Length: 210
Length: 363
Image (cartoon, rainbow over all chains, first blue to last red; front, top):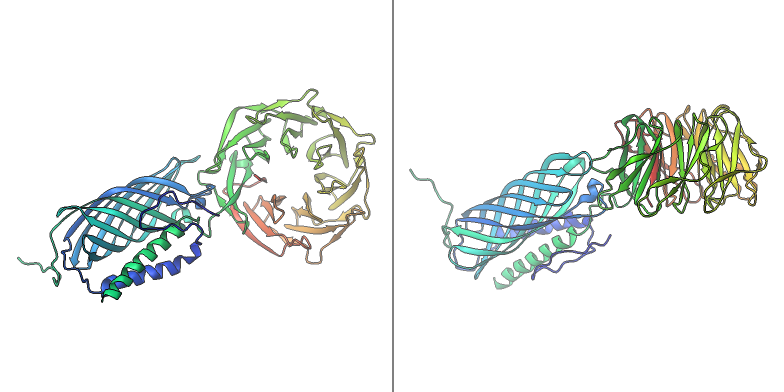
């Protein structure tokens, strides 16, 4: 089935007819990418924020045919994601996200490692977040289910000032297993990032001092 | 170093592009295609499923089953895919549901349309203009015209039409010209011509026609040359040749022929005939001689079903056969061999909390 993507970002060319059977390969590529983030030494000299707090709009293309629907559902909502960076290039991110449509909604909470790669005024990042997702389906006898969620994705921030940057895009492959079915979903997010603290180049992990 | 960094950015863009492209499709295991609706008498409800047209698998529509009338036993989907009709055996009426295109959800339109006593089977013509219902206790057939705009039913002039004792099943010829009604208490089939435009029924000269004991189900083959009747009382199937002009019936070659124990349902697709046997929990498959109507049981037949199979339906594409099993409360899906009509593989594709009676597909 050909599905037209409703959202496009300047840096992402959307390809409509790729089969989801390729997702294992895709995941491998993304893991490779994350490893690259970890192993390649950042060449840029700018600081990485110690703490980032992202809040913004998100759109999820939800795999609702697994619920018996005739086509995927477009859900609109929010994404709130704080992150604490331990060293240059690596930190821990969490997210609370909610997306809503006419017949169903989706809320998730997840946490996991984040990988960073600065370049000039831009900061590329990737993450693997694992957590829980809850869905309410408002069809007939309303049904609700909670199950695990895995978000595999990344994006790009662009500095606006010393405190703020704009999240130009964040794209996540969101894997869920609601109602004993498997869903392969795609989520786009954009918004503002507030940040403070800085990790200088060559900085090591912080130590706790009394 | 610069090359490595550039390779990192390129791989970032590549991976994100890949992610974006992948998300536009539904998952491989998800259903795509059309909906199926199952009458669940004890639940007073209709269960809804999304049918994967490739695998034939049924995915339950979340929120299903949807409440309806009392003891729905027979079901039909309007060819527009907008409406579902159910004969409520316990309520003596017909339910109309509208179908949500996006979610498959059924919403019942009230009030229900009155039928005779104990409506037990229902069939719609291919154009979606008329619905025929047997009323088992009233010994009548009710005929309704269907509004194409809102799906509402209006009983046609002269309806209900009297028929034989305890009409339990009916079959409409694909052209809509002839209607055949099985009389459960008599070894007879009553035949009617359907008046175009009005839907009124006229008895065909020579009707009723003799069949085996306790006819329980009947079907007209797609070529409209033959009528087959499952005789529950004597474990046989009667084959009858249809006069294309008058609709009258004559016995076909090798009729009646043996079935399993308690043949309760018969359906046809292509050149194959499928007889579901309640007592032996299986399906017999026969090939049909297109000239004589004689049947030959396939060597691999019978094929096992769940426990208590009561009805079998072929999907609109003729690719899968679905059997509703009342005792095991599930639906068995058979893949149809397009060459022989055989059923090389089967699996339980849906389990329902309450016993399913019949299944119908939206096209």
